[in-house]
Image 1 (cartoon, rainbow, N blue to C red):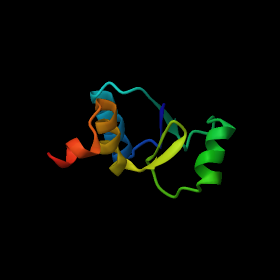
Image 2 (cartoon, one colour):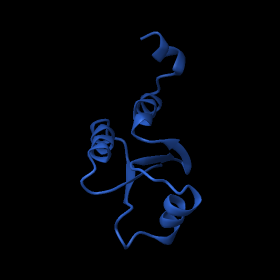
Image 3 (cartoon, rainbow, N blue to C red):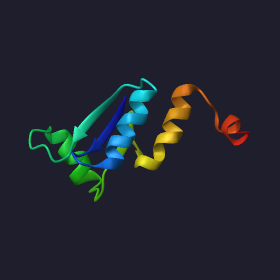
Image 4 (cartoon, rainbow, N blue to C red):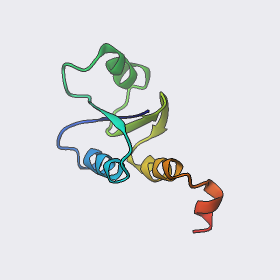
Length: 88
């Protein structure tokens, strides 16, 4: 499962969501500024990792990076290996 931590009016967050939606990849979007987010998500974003920027992306509970991680996520979901992507 992919989890994207972001916020309203964030163009990078919208770009991440658009890329995932275009590839029909399921993900959970957490607005870190929404007061109703779960304590677990608050602890992950603000506590454990203490991020200072959005978006931040996790895959299967493991931190993978910010918006720059999206191409790698898309390749993995498409089944493209690192070796194949190096060949162009």
